[in-house]
Image (tube, rainbow, N blue to C red; front, side, top):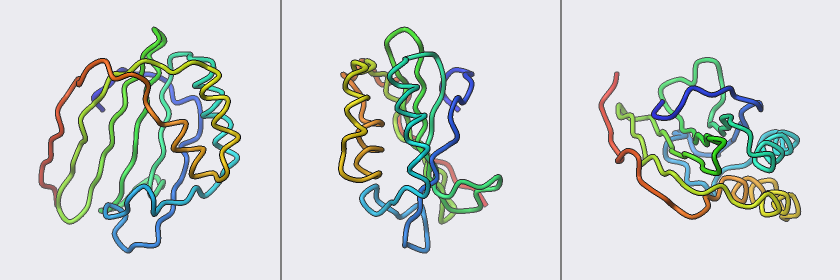
Length: 143
């Protein structure tokens, strides 16, 4: 993990996708399995306490040979660090790690009024003003 060692304060949000290879699923294809978990993620972002949040597809103790997940670290100094991992078809890919300003608490609180759980998730994981790219995108093969 390219970020800091922080506690995961909420259960990861498990996502579902109708495609056979979860690494091929676009965000628009995903559905939130348990929308009640969104409240914990919202509260953590509103509080801004140092912690880590994530959503994953699939979320299993052993995620298998195909999947994806997004990590969001709240660094406690008004900034966040976010990146995505995708794995499948023998390739493991990291997106760039982006440092961004933590949005105002009211922005995160307002995410709950979105029309669907997926829209709420997109709102919660939307970054604030980008401050820096901390690591570039990269990939490596795996078996």
